[in-house]
Length: 354
Image 1 (cartoon, rainbow, N blue to C red):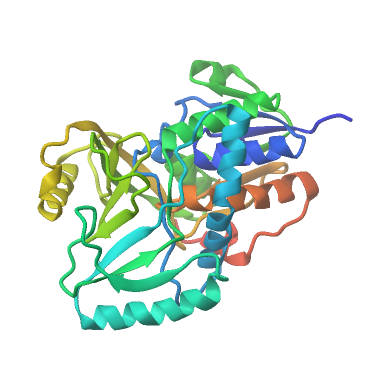
Image 2 (cartoon, rainbow, N blue to C red; image 1 turned 90 degrees about the vertical axis):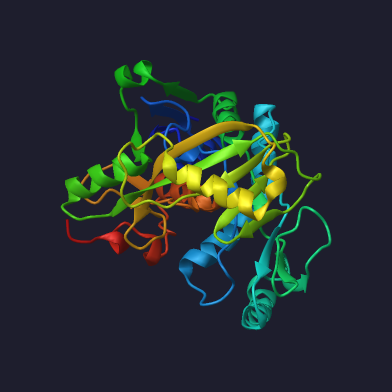
């Protein structure tokens, strides 16, 4: 049987997860990216796959939950096909509670989680663990939730590329990508630049860019230690003995892909929270512009005025966490002509004035 040919533009997390799922379903896929693997927002060191709070339930949170629950099997299959670890681990997260009101709110959220998370993860208020790897808490209590996972983004992207190749596909980067012609249906997963270009093509704003910065430290937390989220700062221990810290949120910037004084301020804030990190060497400083859709949710679907073209974008800060489920939706749409995309995650849901 002839394998359908599909071209994916963009070798970030959306492009590669979609290409992998399409390959699993029998498509012959080529991924093209003139900038390289994870050259945009997907290549940051943080790798925090964390859910939104389990209340005020909406479509984005529902799809995010589905995707996070898919994570263990999805990333295990990628690692097996690639013969390479992705750094995935569902290690949970601790968050401090500053006062009695925050404790009461967190306890209410625990009730929501009990119903909505289907018993597959917990959100609970516990006494602050008496260990170094525990967030300072004025109330003496913290939230522990077991749905959060971590991944090494560049290892995951590299593994996805290898897995696609193992299925007979191609991942073509740099100058070679510029000379390769598209084949079959074309899926555009081109990040911030693509978000702006698609909006201009449609005469509708689809969103804006927001810069984020993060860093990687040579610090080994206890084995399978949970992530910590303290005063707006993520601390993500990775399995290779490093610790990622992030991230900033900047609507305005001078240089899109270089870290600056905003990251310095974040680092100093992290050291104030955990002074024991002062001796850890800084291994990497990173910055990139993330695509933030008008709805603040990822969106995907057919390109309205281009036959045979599709788009997926707007991952912002939750793209890696939602990528597995969105990849399934895109494969359903492109291969089977089944549009399972909820309206809130559709292209049209993000239309706004230019």
